Image (cartoon, rainbow, N blue to C red; front, side, top):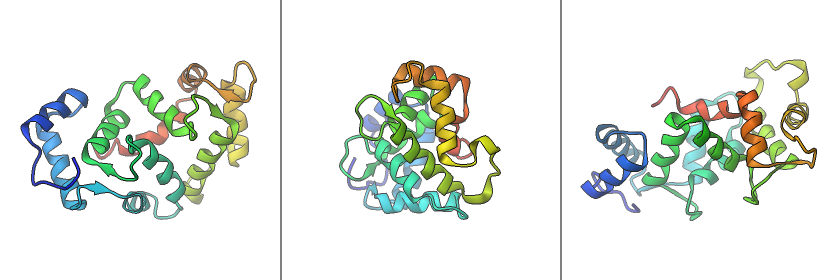
Length: 190
């Protein structure tokens, strides 16, 4: 799905109906908007950052947007086509909790080694704090990224090895839903 075409083919539509939580009409609407906003048929990292800037005008969302972009860009070619966009949007906005957790795990597992290290978690949490700026008043035990990550690791890192497995992340996120709430950005849109 490279260069933009005016509408999705029947085959593309059928495939996306099967692989997302959107119906035909919704997919056509999303595609129409995507094609209008991305006439080249793909979304670049810079364009993706601009979208985040609209949601977070008082902070700096560029780092967080980069991390999210990397998860959306499933084939790692440096751009997001409509299929990548709509599949990620489907999971983050309408997916089951477990699907959202797998997606969130991919976001935090920056080097894709199958674990979330303390440092990876810190990088994402720093990016989130930078993005929300001073718009959110945080409790004292979470008023710095380091304190927040320490709290998360105390809750999740069951074997105290300094990294989280998918299972530790899954169990811990069920105890602390704010871990996955960063994905809820799209809930109002969809």
